[in-house]
View 1 (tube, each protein chain N blue to C red):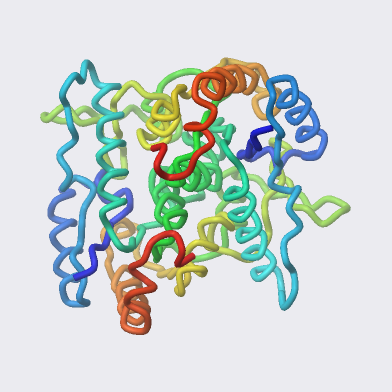
View 2 (cartoon, rainbow over the protein chains, first blue to last red; view 1 turned 135 degrees about the vertical axis):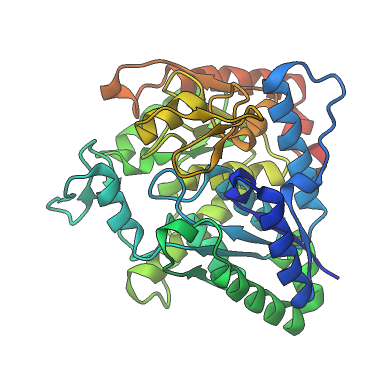
Length: 203
Length: 203
């Protein structure tokens, strides 16, 4: 059964293991073994202090990803207009290994609109057509739901960034879009199980 | 000369190519060829509309990264308490390929403090010792400058997330911390040029 890495800020939920169990049960329905980041016990030998512990967790997560065949990432906007940066990192990690990365975001609308809301002041369109934020940095305007690398990874994996509008209170727990990603993943693995599960050559 | 991928939100500066030139000149001083994301011309054949163009750029950036030997990432907080998500993605991508990833942030202080500032209200410490944000999501407290995957990548590459406090106005342009990363990179490549430039086996 292909091992599916459950990337996302779900680890920060009040009860992360309950959410992990819900996701793993859905994974099984679609023929995957769900693997949650907290499943791996980091090697704490020689660890001194919290910074060391954090780095040990990072190493454990990387080992876990290498041992998985694909990922479904919770790319819901997190503390800003974009997804959680740890999740973005993990999407890039899996993608570089040639492993499919599906992703979902429980938030509607294009990135550009969320950036405008983040600054709380209208973006300015300059002569060249670039949208510019109050800090002078331009804002990408491709009509995508997040940074182009994030959406690109999902598209290149045979899926898309699945976007769902859910009530604010269930933004980090709703699993409809997650399940849509599992459907895409099952389809991809049914079509080309070997290619999908293969290493870097399957980019 | 090792090819060094210049990851970061520098592409969103008002004059990104001027910043690219400054970074490339510094790279040469340290024995590297700097490669800026905008150097690659995306393949626009068959591209229809802005979303397609965005995805073509994503593909071009991934090809560029595969052709580079290491990266220095600008991990300065961007539109929130963490770095730009495209940069986080690229750090994970290079790390998965076993290529060294150095990183810097032109902002002082731990991630926890910036998260508190982001919410604009004090974090609450629960019985178990976890800090919790107003949305109920916990906040990692390892004393690190950003998400543990980001700092972990820099540490595992033989460096650290180099943090520099600079005036607000030069947060996205100051290159002192970037140059500190180049020093770390030169040291690593001088010590083990082959291992540092090798593929996934050099993790």
